[in-house]
Amino acid sequence: MIFGGLPFLQLDRTGIALLGAIVLVASQVISVEEAYRSLHLPTLILLFSFMVISAQLRLGGFYPWAARRIASSNGSPPALLGAVILAAACLSAVFSNDVVCLAMAPVIMEICRAKNLNPVPFLIGLACAANIGSAATLIGNPQNILIGQTLNLSFGRYLLLTFIPIALSLIVTWCIVIVLIHRQGWASGESDMAIPEDKRSEEPEPLDLWQTTKGLAVAIVLFIAFLYAPWPRELMALAGAGLLLCSRRLHSRHMLGLVDWQILILFIGLFVVNHAVQRTGLLTQVVEALASAGFDLRDSGPLFVTSFALSNIVSNVPAVMLLLPTTAGEYAGTLLALSSTLAGNLLIVGSIANIIVVNESARKGVMIGWRDHAAFGIPVTLATLAITVAYLSLLS
Image (cartoon, rainbow, N blue to C red; front, side):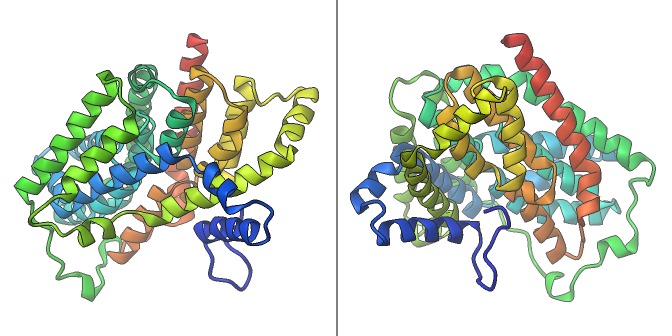
């Protein structure tokens, strides 16, 4: 998980987690029944349901349409950057930040090309804002879904706790990008906007008003229901996904084809592997040994530091799964959700959203290197984590 693969084998982190689960079951270290019981079905159901809802909006052309609407104004580059950051954050708070970046990055590059702007700060701002915005709710990203479902956190209470630090983090992100880009200017050079010949003829996806309206209506109803209804979140979300699958125009094959099965399989594999490790008592021994050395993971400070470090070593979902057994209560759950998500802005590999933006940029001829991202990502991460620590310290 640390290196993201195995030597001489074409395996990513999802493949590694699945292979680990297969080895444990096939070697009868744990039984099939025990492996099944280790799965946290409410988390998997909620993840799947929102992937279906997001697929509905992708097929309806909502995300590119939203990005084009942002560009329709004739404001200054800082204003355009602010609009991109705000839109990405708001969308990522309800839908997957990965999907938001995947759909909006190509359109933002077209906007920058039309306005002769350097696309790099806008693309990095998109990725950072998507990560930050996804931390605002318990459905914004996979690790938050896991934390919320496992610790049974209140959806509305979590939103109230995170609104101020997330809002301040977005403002600071906007300011940092503006300050860093000020020296080199907003204008683009020709080399920045080189476009591969086979990508020049791509047409923007048209907006299907009816399909988009259906997807947004289900998402809004679910968001309100999560705030006030007493029913389990995963069952309400599953009902909404089932309603969208009953369509006369969008084939279920296309809807389910946009579901991120890789993430779901990653969760399944990690559930099984983590259950086997917890059964050995090794994690408990490590936690107790660290506590006796003065570094108790059940305290907020060590939990915050460990979450930040692990999220950048093995990525945030495995990090959260490792730390959840030592996490209890609303405050600790909120701290873990914010720290693991905001840590993803530090490096390109810290978040799938970052990787998506970099890959989509390369497809369009815009190269974002490690140094390019780190120049923005490191100060954004340090500033947003400082805001989070300061705010949560006031509440504790």
